[in-house]
Structures are given as C-alpha cells and as structure tokens.
Length: 398
Image (cartoon, rainbow, N blue to C red; front, side, top):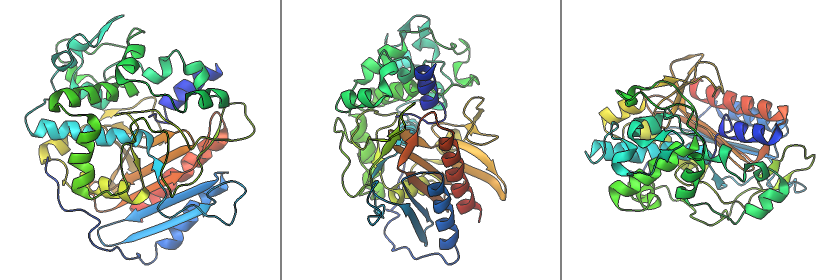
C-alpha cells in the first residue's frame, strides 16, 4: 500500500499541515547456534519503543531462528504474538510486482523501454502527464514523476483519522480510479523525451505500481493476483502468502494491528482494513517473506540479465531509512557496516503494521520482521523504525 518513508509521511503531512526453483521450505530448518539471543535482544528493543507486538525471523537454506515480544492484543499479556502470524506487508508488495514485470521482460513479452502509452493507450494523459514519455523502467524505479495517488486523493484529508478509517475499511478503490486521482495534478516532472528510461530524478509514488499492475494485466491477459500466484506463490510453496482482493479480513493466527492516528492518545484497532493492489496488498508471514527474498536474490525467480537490471539503482533524496539508500526496480539497497555488498530491502506499511526486512546480495540469508504498531506523527515511530533497521542489519552482518 504505502511506504512509511514517503507515501505515509507525505499523506500524514498533508493531513497535519523467469525460472523458479524448488520450494525453499522443503527442508526443515534448524536453529542457528549463537543467533537466537541476539535476535531476541533486537526484537525486545523494538518492543521497548512502545510497540505492542513484534515478530521476526532470520533464515538461510539450513537455519531458521525466530523471536517475538509483546502480546497479540492490548490487555492480553498472557497471549503472545503467534509465531506464524499473518500480516499485511504493505509496500513490500512492490518487489513482487517488479519481479512479475521482469519475468515478462525475460520472456520477451515486455521491455523496460516500452512506454506506458504502448500498453495503455491514452491512460496517462492530462494536466501535463504524458504516458508516451514514461517507460516501464520509470515505473519500477520510481522515476516517472507521477504523483502519488494516495497523497492527492480527494479523501486523503479524512483517511488518517479513527472515524475516517471506520468509514473506509470495507471500501476499495479500483486501480483506474487511483490513476485518475494521480492524474488530477500536474506531474512532478516528465522524463526526458529522448531517453526517458535513463531518467534519474526520483520520487516515491504508489501510482507507479498501480500502472505497472495494469500493464502486467494487459500483457498477460490475466488478473495481477493470478500472475502473483502462478509465478511466485505456487512455485515457491508460499502456503501462507496471498492477495486478499476486496476482503478486509486477516486470517488467523494474527495479532491486533494498532494505529495511533495523528493527535490521538489512544490506539485504534485497524486489523480490519482494505486497500492497496499491485502497490501494496499482499498478505504473508515472516517465514514466507524471507523465502521469497532469498529466492529472488539467489536467481531462482529471475534470469541473470533481469536480476542485474533490478539491481541498477538511482539515488533517493527523500526516502532515507538509512544513509546511502539507492532504489532499483522494486527493491532498494543500502550500505551496512560489516557487509561488503550491503543489503537489499524495501519495507512497507499498512494501517497498524510495519514490515521491515532485508536480504544479502546472494540470497543466502534473509531477515524479516512485523511490528503490529503504527504511531503516525509520533517521534516514537522513528525510534521503532530505527530499532527494526538495526535488527535487520545485525541479522545479516553477524
């Protein structure tokens, strides 16, 4: 749905002012010696920022270590967060969507240099927006200049309040309507007419992945959700990963997702929520998410040329969970002390849920976490995010 680093921040600010291999789950993992205590310490550190519940996993092909802290619901201290809790991974969905697009590129059915106009004639026009000058690469790399449909939506002023949440939790918005909202404003920029795919200006926008989802459907003739299932979920054996469609419900087991809306001293139970599509609707678990990330980086989902293209990055100037972040095609990279190759990650937020994860460049090791608390406009959220980043960094660098 939204990235807490820009999509959520921008909207809140407006309110306030290829080939796949065998399933990676085939072998039963064993506990890695010496890592459980460190992971538990880092999970406890996230909990100490005020989060209600935290779940994390570190995995490799042979080892799986998990840790949790807090409770499944406020007032229920004897009911911990379930080990296999489902949660909405938010904008981590974008990595799934980018993988789909790059698989189509590897099959010769789509090109990164194809324009939006080629696949969706006339769909991106008006107010200076021009789909003839936006390529698939621009969409996936967030260099299109399109406005974020969430930030410019006519309902954005009401979206992040308890009452607004309750009014909209069963309401879904069609991708075409999301795109219409984005096109109601002039673009932040339009890529160079001569070489649009080489554009290096960067701006995070959920609209890019709404358009990418529409292109995937046009190329394949199938719903985006079907392609996610057939190309990623089923081949990898991700039995606890799915796209919910229009349903606002999370399956059990899960934990209560709490949101502290701006100016509210008490949290709102936002476990029931709809919203997002190719930009942020996937529901998963820490284990399944880690399996996907390891499969992606180890080359089991993309051919070498497409994986290399995914790793071609641009500088991000206003998306800074940590210094030195660069954004590729649906995935980002950051340098980490103690790691020569840095780590690949994305991160995502849905109401009441923050997903933080990372994977080594070779896919040998992945760390995933879910924190069931979101405090909008509160400095405590920054502390929570930093603690989650530290967990991932320490898990992947030792």
